[in-house]
Length: 302
Ligand SMILES: C[S@@+](CC[C@H](N)C(=O)[O-])C[C@H]1O[C@@H](n2cnc3c(N)ncnc32)[C@H](O)[C@@H]1O
Image 1 (tube, rainbow, N blue to C red):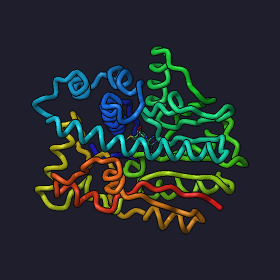
Image 2 (image 1 turned 180 degrees about the vertical axis):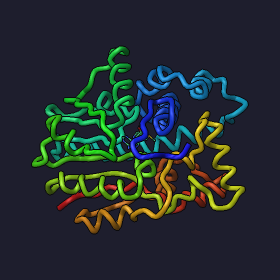
Image 3 (image 1 turned 45 degrees about the vertical axis):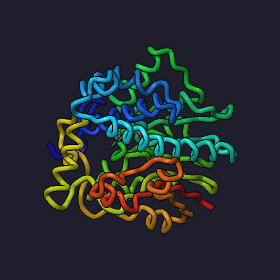
Image 4 (image 1 turned 135 degrees about the vertical axis):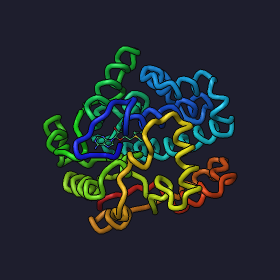
């Protein structure tokens, strides 16, 4: 079913299931000691989607080769390290206010070593926030920062909800929007960055991804489109990925942030893979082509 204004979800349905998918990859990356996220696996198991249970219980043999699982773990390790390092650098520079937009099953407020006095705000859909927070509580996880969770739709008045929960717009802030943008309508993506800019004094930072084209999610020729859908279905999704993302022209994130006064730097995903000693999509030319130019980006306001 295609997206609609005001649609909502939990962690086992629609866009919410993408949060469970990336957490399953983090669980694999943790097992492979590529990252340290001990809560990813119990969270994915608590959501209970059969495909991810099969992967984590070692029963996914028919659908997933070892190479598939390794690629999932390595891809997520590169991504997780990038955003972990971004936040660690921000706090090393004295930033004490963090906003994790579309937090999904991200456990950074529970697993990073935050300096005393750091406030971390997490924003996602209400059912996503409630499930993760209550599950982590029942698992005995304790936040390592002053954590405030906010269940609100990022197409709605999230800045109002943020302020109502104690966010201080006069303090430099580090924002992350990891794995979010493709699930926002193009105009909501612009509004997201407009709000971030309006709420950010000098020295604030933001990190997100830059995807040169949506082709990896929609495909323009039938065969690669089919390959992409097969890959997605192998992960256990009932929805078409093409129905979960918003299509159509959207702003070039790097240009948009630069035009709003941010100093942007990017790192190509492929180069981060190589720097980590991983192979990337070298064995899959169609996929490699679709992700050509994909960058993780960080920006600072001077
Ligand atoms: C691929 S997941 C990424 C989750 C997390 N950032 C991570 O990397 O593990 C996408 C997340 O975006 C959230 N999301 C997408 N659109 C949203 C919206 N309009 N309002 C709130 N959350 C949204 C989903 O609920 C989901 O948790």
